[in-house]
Amino acid sequence: MALDWSNLTSLTGNRPFTVSRVTLTDNHVAIEGEFELPPMARLSYDDQVFVAEFIRSHIIRVTETAFDDFAAAVLDSAPPRISEQDTLGNMRLLDEIRRQIGVSF
Image (cartoon, rainbow, N blue to C red; front, side):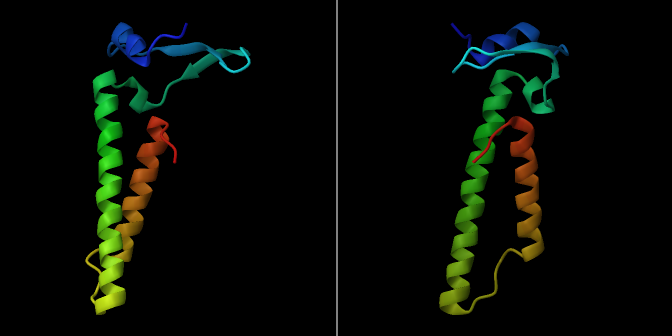
């Protein structure tokens, strides 16, 4: 039976470690070697949960703002509150954070 990720983070604390065996659960194939975890995986379990929730909630707020701006621009000819450069920069930053913590959509 697989243990929860929080078990591993509580055992290792802030000490560096590598993963040396990965087993695919659907077919029980094991891969052995030295795997270094991404920086976000080195955070405590609680910090990982916080970061994941922050990203999810931030994405919702940014998306809502973008939709509101788009509607105002189309319906009222209002200028957007967020520049195109800022929007692209936010997207790149969030994409990188998601990549580092292994969250994909």
